[in-house]
Length: 590
Image: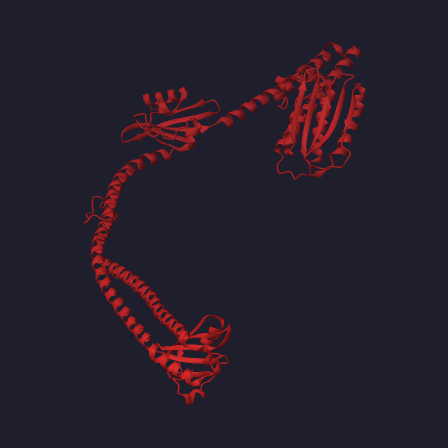
């Protein structure tokens, strides 16, 4: 048989409260008893100290030195009758001289008292005390002793003892009263607790019963508790919870239908708009895509939230004619692919706005078109020249040896240009596909000296001087030797190509903190400031006619930039037209 809820709670509360009262009463009783016990014995000890002081005043201590037994015996007997206690005089050796409770004939039978606790304490302090059962009288006694001193010389001890049976009887009676009072208090508290617990339990059971009804879905159930206390406040809160829960469930039923419809169309950013043209759902990605800083847009018209005129125009047209719409919308920083579909809800026909960021794809498409156009242009120029020279040779120039030789040389030159272009394109494609390269440390100075030696004869043929300022101490950088060779080769080759005759090129290395800088400084034609930001783009030329004249493909600096980025190196350029250019590459020291 299951025990009712209210009985379980009543039993638990009653047990907890009774246990708490019992523990508290026990602790308080023990404390009071110990305090009273200490108080009584302190009181008796204080009285004995006073009695000892009075006895010392009337005792002729010289008699103790002379061991006047008759005088001392009369003194202890008279003091014992006067103060109602046992009086003992002991010499400095611990021998009992007289005792009010021991006849003279038995004095000699007493054991030495020098090692008694109260005597030992009296040797160290003013008074010595102890409670024990006397072997002489067979009773529990409280002993108090004090040294007898004449002219700063100890001559013996005066000891008083009082029977503690009366104190023990009083303490026993006190314990009995405490126990009886505790039992009475426990019974009264139990009765009061039972009454209070029954009252609380009754109200709590009513709350539990009504709460179970609310949990079963009976949200119209209400709780009435009197009088007004904490339990009634709990009942009121449960009533408010039931009311709000009822309202929330109704809203959730409607929102669930709308949300399920919206989520079925989610791709990236999404905004749902009701027939009144107010926003009823959105995700955070949508706010980012339409550049809306306000996150509280539920219930607002889309005209106040979306600031793009083109997008607002599409939504307006959709509400006028709700058919599937798809278009690209340009914002300041990105481009969106927008899809608008119908949203059918109870209030009528709404709209679902799906937003997809296609900025990256548009950029890639633009890069692809630009690349194809540039490659086509770069191939078209030498091919047109080769075709023109070949047709001229076929038409009339084969018979003229000087013209024939000249045209064949030009065809070879244009063929070399095409070959260089194809090689650079393949190299660039290979570099872009490279991933997860494991770089290692190597000394770049010997490699740099080899590169300078390779270009020295080309520079001398153009009357260009190459000066070097390289560090002498050995150092190592993190990277790839072949990539490093390609970077420096391209930069030195460019410097020679774009430096006029009788010019100069300086190659320097500088160590700064944890990096090493390789600088190629030329006195060439220089680069205008407006072109500095674009010189690393593919096929970009500052002077197109001069670049082709010197055999450039427009891909050298693009290759240099890609190789530097692969090795976590940094490339910089400084230049002024007519003065020259400085290309610097920074590598991390190993």
